[in-house]
Length: 99
Image 1 (cartoon, rainbow, N blue to C red):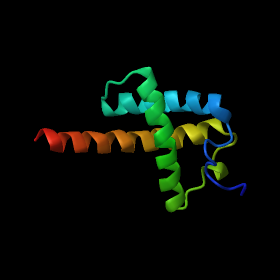
Image 2 (cartoon, rainbow, N blue to C red):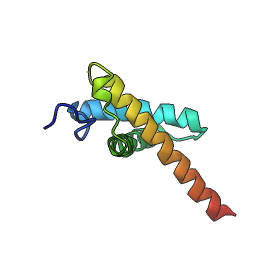
Image 3 (tube, rainbow, N blue to C red):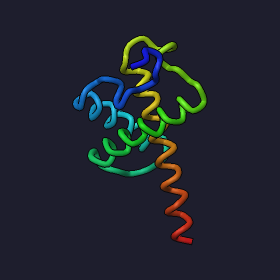
Image 4 (cartoon, helix red, strand yellow):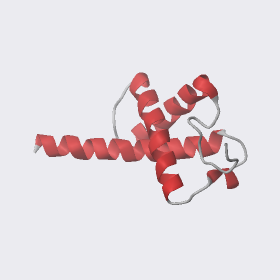
């Protein structure tokens, strides 16, 4: 494993840390996008968002490990970013179906 990778499937935080970060990230993304989801969907959106955010950050060459010390803030930031993108895309797709 490279020490400068952004996230390695949850950033090595374990399943409980992944659920915690996913729930917080999903909740923040929910508030930022004006969505209304429950706790379970917040966790799911946050976890999917973490993978999406990590993919995008790695694709553009951003290494949050060089900016943040520790695992929490970098993982949370990437997860929120990915979750917001995910929710915006879902809203766009749902909006097109309704039209």
